[in-house]
Image (cartoon, rainbow, N blue to C red):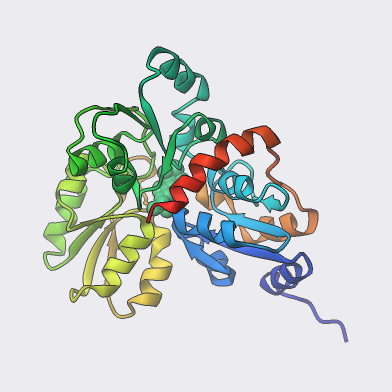
Length: 309
Ligand code: 13P
Ligand code: SF4
């Protein structure tokens, strides 16, 4: 009797054959999150990649995340189901601009958000994620001037939280979060007056002003699960609904459409599909290939990021 495997069964079998781990960001489609070994925000996934001792990392997220995993695992194979899964923040910050700034301002400490290319990471003194950006900036002596890049909204938020005056901020933005308009959040609050608001720090200032909680994707999920309230307006990518509904069944979650796509989805994250993941595990391609010397230079600031709680 011939049995046909479902796509999911095929992936799980390939995963075993390849001694692979499947890492999925919270913004992936639910069918990908369902079969992942780890689901997380970018810091948690970098930590999972750092601990991995198998052969293949199948990274369901965007390219900068897969590059970080590769820099931490230079001798392992890292596949990304769709190599076009980029990020508008990475695109907003070409390495030449960072090098030019450093030449003109050698006294600055460069703090890069993890949403940057590996070339930019290699030019950085410290890397942070949305989870530990405030702690990373606070770890730098007060008299040292800082260049924070590339996200203007996260930079403004960190500056306001740390009270740091000597901090220049790059002008990059996320096409998903930066285009959530304050007026749409205000309308959602009028419609759901009992709902609490949780926002990602990549959102604009007027959105963050209305938030009851600001944090990374995993921090938002965790916070909502532990609140007494049972209605929430979630100002981030709608893929977080998967874990929210798992961890907080019975609670209600409302999402606000942005002005970029009139939705709350990251078009880059959604390029990954189960079919592309299956093919990536069969072909070990598309895979992340990076110069050894670049990974070496980027690893130190990445490891410093992983050391900050
Ligand atoms: P997190 O670090 O919160 O996962 O954010 C990554 C990201 O790309 C948010 O848009
Ligand atoms: Fe980049 Fe924004 Fe997509 Fe996150 S949501 S990967 S910051 S474009």
